[in-house]
Image (cartoon, rainbow, N blue to C red; front, top):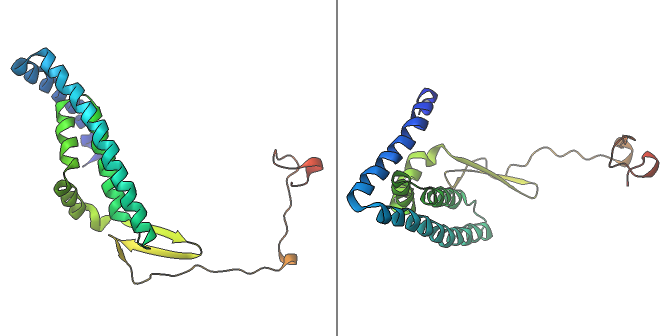
Length: 171
C-alpha cells in the first residue's frame, strides 16, 4: 500500500464502520445490533485467550526441538491482531478478525508474505539464520572472537555516574 493512500484509508474505514452500524441497525434493530457488538467482543476475548495459549505451546515446542518458530510467531501475531479486531466495535473489523482466526486465511497470508520474512536468532555464541522457516546455507556461522589478556583491557569508570560505587569506584 502506498503511503499516500493511508490517510484516505484512515478516514474511509471509520465511515464504513458507521455505515455498517446503520445498515445492521435498520435490519435487525438497535438492541440486537448492540448485542452483536458485545457478543463479538466477548468472542474475541475468548478466542484470543484459547488460541493464544495454543500458539505459546507451539512456539515452546518448536524452541525445544531446536527450530526457529518463525511461522508460529507469525501465526501468533495474526491471532493477536484478530482478537484485537474482534474486541473493537464494528462489523468490518469483526469480519476481518474472524477471517484471521481461520487457519486457511492465515496460510494464505503466510504464502503471500512468508518468503519476504527473515527470522534471525542466536543461541549462545552461535547464530542461526532462517528464511521462511528453513535454515540458510550459512547456518551456524559465528562472529569474530577477540581474546584479551587482563592487561589488554581495563575500565575507566566515570566518577559522576550514578552507578559508580563509593569514591567513584565501580561496585
